[in-house]
Length: 519
Image (cartoon, rainbow, N blue to C red; front, top):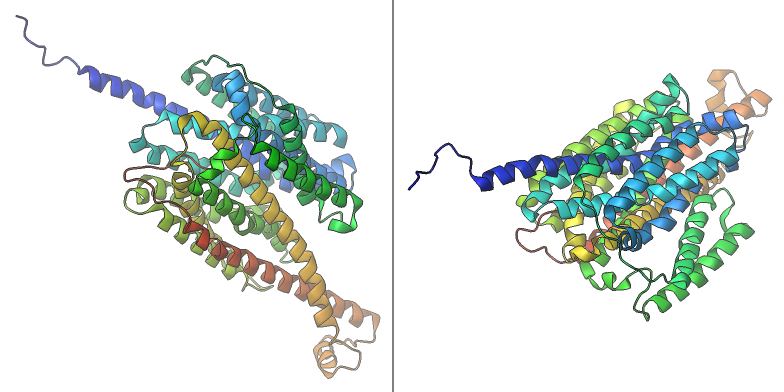
């Protein structure tokens, strides 16, 4: 009988050790893949003025550089589950990364607004698959007891990247050119492609019946809604025939799509997913959180650059404390807090912290310093981390593995629509409140007002002089804008608190259930 070799490695231990680098390689690959999409949604914003000058285009035409990407992405994203069944995950995600990189390069080479809009549509089509595929791949690659750690790193990329996008975009634009914000995608895409190609197994495609009627109705519904949200403010909402037509298309096609989809077995979207109350509640919370998070982020650069006189780089740096706070909160929540607390409690705390941070911004004035603006952002950043990580636990706790891709696609669309709704609402409210406060302030200013005379006297001006009237007009405009931004910051803060009742609709996750990746 041969004695056992005490130095021989345990097969189980060896297997576990061999599996470890593969798992973390998947995490790194999918984080980079997700970063590609979310970074591109915000990094381009600060480069738009430079593109406007380079192409000699109007503000409306500049808006289409953003709108084309968002509309294409939102239209295609719900089809993720369908394409996975048809082509397989590995083939779809490698094609998506390659296509995204190619169109990114073409965006950087663009010589006209027509070309860059076309290339941005291509970016949106291929980029639409990146977030839901990354999410479902990571979810299936880790056992339940390890998903918290994996989620922490994934969330670190997908939440911090869009927050820091304006900062990175400002640095690249100032140091190089606006074209650099597109070229930066190339090395990230190449590295992610090389890593993910070797870690995912090949899957045999399955025959899938295409519901062309449902597909057409869905595309028309989502595209009309996204178009309405993106250009509504520029087109003066329902005063525009374009917005009227878009709303009519959205309403008719949307109603038919939902009613028809609930009756047929093979609809392009599986509406039975919404029978799970936790998944439905999580999507509702994500939609509402778009106003609190993305609405604030969208107007903050306009506020500090247009009204407070911050430079492009300073405005970009303002997002760094918020992004770092969100990153630290994300890691602690995914790796530690979820082990000890009900995720619904963490979601509620995240909503409250985000709301308090936005409300604090509602109390700043025209003399606000960098840190008076940054510290409320830190508070909101901590809230974002506490919200996004445990929300995934609740959203996907009852979703089977065979429906992960489709559920991830729907979840991603809701997040995108939430951001669009939030941005549209705050943009509309800023313009509306500026007009309101201008009227309220101006009605008290007359050439014979004692207060007006006393205010201008130290400056050697009179209200009935051209210089005096101009100075007063400038002051009224600044104060009206300041009050409008304060109102909107308060609105976004209370919007976060308004989502707290939705948390009560969510089921408590089973004991030992860890977070799934969320975006």
